[in-house]
Image 1 (tube, rainbow, N blue to C red):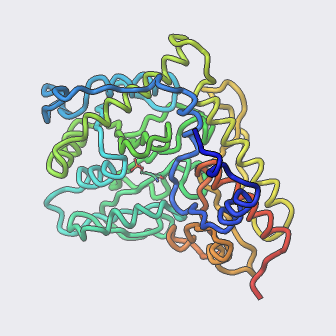
Image 2: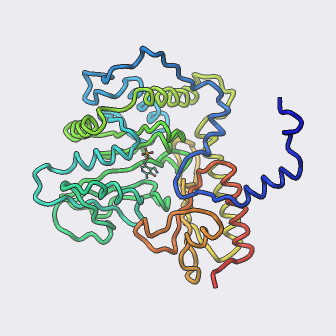
Image 3: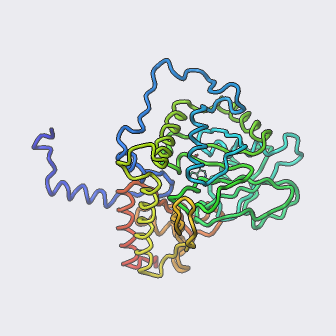
Length: 391
Ligand code: PMP
């Protein structure tokens, strides 16, 4: 019990509110803490217990191409995709990774011939996810090099195009833009889940990357997976993973498998319905956040946000709208640098410059925790109401 002297008084609560009002809100990363509320309601339904003697070996499934993938996680991934209808899993190899960030690098390694005379160009249509150039350039590989915006790509020779769908940062539905015979495509489907976008078809590409981080919000587990059509490509991705980290944590795989099973069971009526279904909850929460942000933005001409079409979602059996994990703000011309404007109001976002476009754009996370999001709305309202344009 809290002793009386520690009970908050009105003035101490006012002081906390003032400190809170003054704190920096970090909306730069897409840390998916908004889903914590849901998993909190689920109590111990997803608890995983592991004894000291369990899961000790490097190996998870020695006979499988991806020898470090736990069969239980492979099954849970396939069941989840079948339930949501967002990707074809039949006749695919599953490669598990430490987040899909690691699988992106594994895919680059797998798609580049080891004996090429020049590094293969890696491109993505701007605005592209800011980590693609970072991950491509980081180790100064002689296998591949970052070649920027796919729309501007004119170099001859083999290339790799990364297509993020729906796109981070702007939420737009994307297709490859270079479309040459000597190209390979990596489809990053981190946000192809019902809470972010209508599920219009089961994706059926050669290499598809998914991440547990954005699917359920468990970014800390660091689990991603690739669905790969070609056996040789999958084998090279496994080779990368074997050399880089000798596989992926089994504890993380077990937890991911359990959470995926709980979600899928609830959709298949295999579990009591005492809590709202995950994707219904997440969809409602995302739509509500977007509605609130759009209402504030509509009050002035200072900013604009992309508009998305209504499309039929086969998972929800109705017309739904894209509600991306990020808000792609565009400031009107006389404001100039959009992220600077937000920074002055102690809101950290990522400038358009990191996505290959102008600084009048800024990406802000829409999936932060409840408190940060509410504080963001308050500050956004204040910016709009005072028409805070730099002089
Ligand atoms: N792709 C996209 C488009 C992302 O936004 C992210 C996370 N921000 C990732 C991949 C990587 O996710 P993780 O490494 O957490 O699996």
